[in-house]
Length: 246
Ligand code: OAD
Image 1 (cartoon, rainbow, N blue to C red):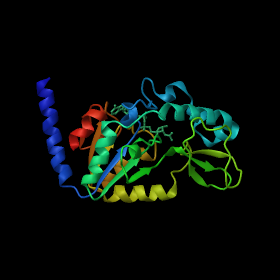
Image 2: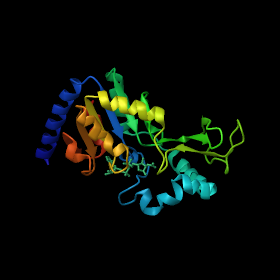
Image 3: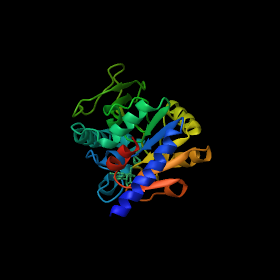
């Protein structure tokens, strides 16, 4: 056990030195970083997509078919997430951002915990469960009602509101997508934390950053399709590993 811990701390020291020499840092996070806060992940043993069908709840077609059912599911998730708070990994990323002048956090998570932890330069590429968008006039607003009144309607035009999240089959919002590409293209150190790396286009981001010259470090409980191109994969809990980079 001592040997393993020593080896880990040596590897982390080397990575920290690499990090210190880097100019532009990007962290890419997925559901795994919020797991220790109590937010369910999507895949894996108790993952949401083991209990529910994404095609029934997280596609534009499912919303057209039954906005009530989709809103009920989002209400359940809002109720679940509302009392939860950030963990040591979220906090460590917020602290790293303070240390580096160029630091971008790209997250697939819609839970808002990175911002709650103090991260500022956050690109929520799959949107936010705490935002709603009008299906008629596209107006986006924050909404923290728990539960939200079903069915919610737009204050501006009366149109039906939907969660401001990206569903399967939908493109990433163009402005966020552009900013993401830019950050990945210029970063020299990319940390990929708690994502299964199977949902596109995000799954290709580490490949793109690596091709553009970034050093890629992955933190996950297990190896993923990103592991083959990562310079280092550290196996362990995000809440225990990420703070070691400080
Ligand atoms: P997944 O649920 O697919 O993957 C979670 C990953 O986190 C897995 O690789 C786990 O091994 C890892 N993990 C779990 N607990 C961890 C911990 N404590 N520390 C470190 N790693 C841990 O979640 P995502 O990759 O985020 O999209 O899923 C991507 C997208 O698929 C989501 O944004 C969502 C989903 O469908 C949409 O809803 C559009």
